[in-house]
Image (cartoon, rainbow, N blue to C red; front, side, top):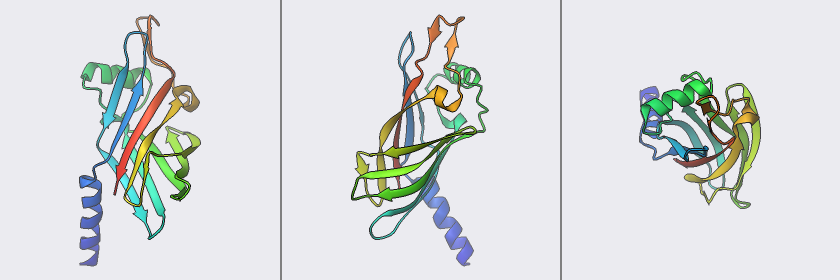
Length: 161
C-alpha cells in the first residue's frame, strides 16, 4: 500500500507541476522559440535548501507551433527525438542565490552556475545562455546556408515543486 501511495504522489508531482522550458534563438530570417511543458522533475528540499533538482526534457516535446519547423529543427540538429536535455543539481545555495549543476545535451556535458530570478524551496525560475556548438550540435541552416540560425540560444526555465 505504501508503494502505491508513494507512486501516486510522485506521478502527481510529475504531471501537475507547473513547469516549463523555453529555448529562444535567432536566425538571419527571424527569431524562433521552442517550448516544452512536459518535463520530468525530481525536486526535493529540506527546511533550508534545495537538496535535489533533476530536470529532463525529451527533445520531441519542444515545439515551436509550426510542425514543419519543428521537424526541420530536429533534422538539422541531427537530434534523435527520443533524446533528453538534462540538468542535474550538484548543489544549491539559496542564501547566495545560486545553483550549480551539470547541463547535458546528447553525450556532451557542461557545468553551469545559475543565478535564478526566483530561487525558493518550491520554485526555480530564470534563464541562461549557451552555444549549440558547445554541445557538438550543428548550427541549423536551410537553403544552402542562406538562412542560418545563431549559435547562441537562451534557455529559460520555470521549475515548480
